[in-house]
Length: 136
Image (tube, rainbow, N blue to C red; front, side, top):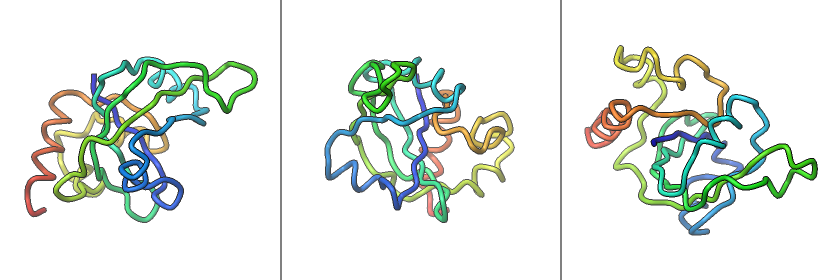
């Protein structure tokens, strides 16, 4: 499967993930985002999206663990996943570009803007990678 995770770059930018080599993806509390996080499997591909002022897909990561109990959740209700960087995209693909492309009309990034973990279809994945490879 393919996924997209969102993070404020001032909180934890893709470059920080590259520097750290792995990260615990925890603290997700939205019910739908948690459902998606629970579905992630070790080896799944993940787009890394910067929120805030940037609003762009900036890199590719991968899940290096299956979901496990979120270490930040004493109640044991939530899960976390370990992720590792794969590569930075040749150029960021902005939310504006994605919204302007009719192929993404059903993409969760366009439809459910606040969702922090979401599935990405193979077609959406390929299209974003192609967009990142062009000059924009």
